[in-house]
Image (cartoon, rainbow over all chains, first blue to last red; front, side, top):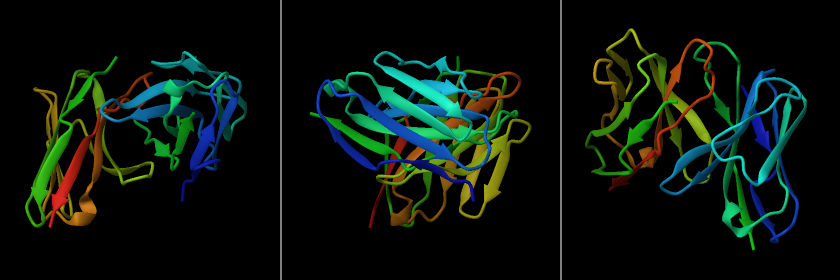
Length: 113
Length: 112
């Protein structure tokens, strides 16, 4: 069974804090993704990575950065959390091959107060 | 990039059929996935269809593809309260593209 594990289900952070969201996958997938999900807006891609130390901006990268030091781990960093970053964050991973299915973690619901 | 459109809500009675529709823009989409998201959880792959197929049936699920109109639908027969969830359409292109793109999701509400 493929497992994508996000470090926290729920997080509450203060405005201005630096926040780390961690994601680990155990299927040796090359690709990893971070999305945020907001009601009525669906899933929006923040960043993705196709290899260790490689990263590409998605549709909404502002206010976020990422780190991929090991193949199995992809971290999302909120440099200075703001209330408009309150959201559900979803990590996913997949093989690089054509049409490969994406596997998702259970999500982290982040509230910034 | 790919644009994917879905209606936001669908409400049905338990036992009825549900039909969730999706339109997409990228005619090179070769794999077309449907994901299901239950409350408070991540997305799970529900079913998929290859672009060279018109229809795929999997127990209570039927996927129809109209490639000419770039229209995909998911039919759930005998809908149960456990089918209440958000359903995402996710066409995926072959070739060099490997980023899954999702519609906004359709919230299916099943009434007893």
